Structures are given as structure tokens and as C-alpha cells.
Length: 140
Figure (cartoon, rainbow, N blue to C red):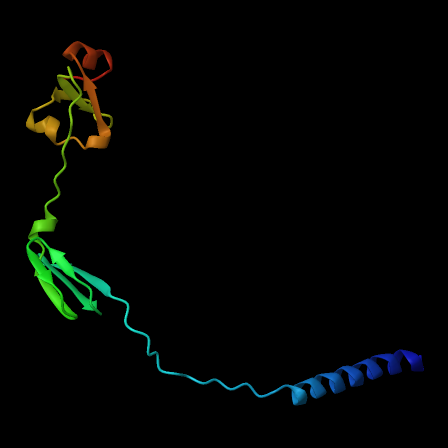
């Protein structure tokens, strides 16, 4: 019974001594901060488009070209973004196709009608004849 108490006490004393010795022997860590003297990496930061104006800043010798406007100096910029805000979607109609329907809808339309033009390109289904569209379950 006496040994049962001595073994944990001896283990605790040995561990405590070892750990305190390691802590005292460890060198003190110092952290030295140095100023970054490397040249700036040319960077263009785009903050967003607000009211049709592109806002951002350039750091370093970056060049920003937007339409016919060219910026070559560092600093904050605000450019008219109307030239890049136009989203031109060009839909190519396969040869011989006369009608189009949406995979998410129930009606078919002539390919060049205003209703047909409003169908998202990824949802378009084309048919050569109105009969083909009706067989597929679409109605005029």
C-alpha cells in the first residue's frame, strides 16, 4: 500500500522537475520586425461599380485601360463603366430550326419572335416544325 502512494508521488516529482528544467533551459524567443523594402507589386484593386462608375485603386506601376481611357499612375480611380456594363448575349439558331421553346415552359414560339428571344440560351429547345413542338408536348 505504501508503494502505491510512493510511485505516483515519485512520478509527479520527476515530471515536475523535468518540465521546470526544460522551461528554464529554453532560450528566450525574440521577434524582430523589419520594414518591407521590396518594390511594390503592380496591383489593381476593383472596389465595385456604383451608379455606373467603376471604383478602385492602383498600387505600383499598374496600367488600367477601360475603353479609350488609360490610367498609368497609382492612386484611386473612378471611371465611367457603361462600356463594360452592356451584356451582349448572342444566340446562334441551328440551321433549319423555325421554333423554340423553353425546357422550363409549356409554349413554343417562332425563333425570331420577341417571346422566343426572351428564352435563356441554356433553356432553349429548337424544333423544325410546329408539329414537332406539339409532339414534344408544347403548345402555341
